[in-house]
Length: 124
Image 1 (spheres, rainbow, N blue to C red):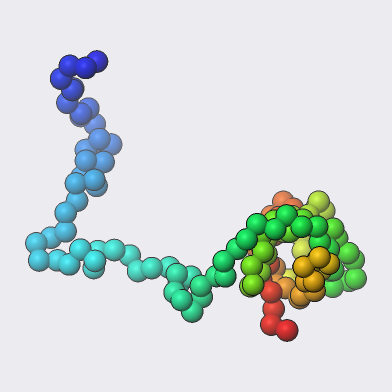
Image 2 (image 1 turned 120 degrees about the horizontal axis):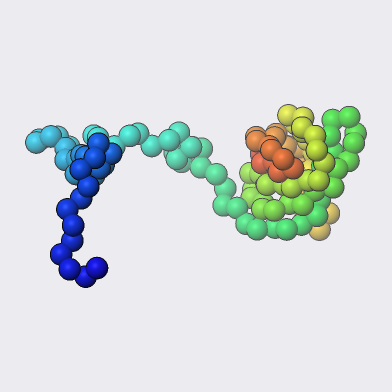
């Protein structure tokens, strides 16, 4: 156990892992050129507002007038993450209402799945 270490196994996977982890850039190449470009959302133009945990009860109003109780999990100046207990797909645009923080904003549903959704507030 504490003696000399055994040589690494001789297998195709081990050889491949060894090649990947010991990769060096060719002589004269700039190391930064080998990195992939940053994702588009990493630019300052698309920077997301700082999120803060909220844990507030709210209501969303769906375009047909139906009101659905939600829990606002986190909140930022540009959007929120909400959880709801209704097994249905939300429409593209909703209205979020939360009384104590005086929120009454139209929002676009960015993503959703199994009772959770991310929304982005639309300009007033």
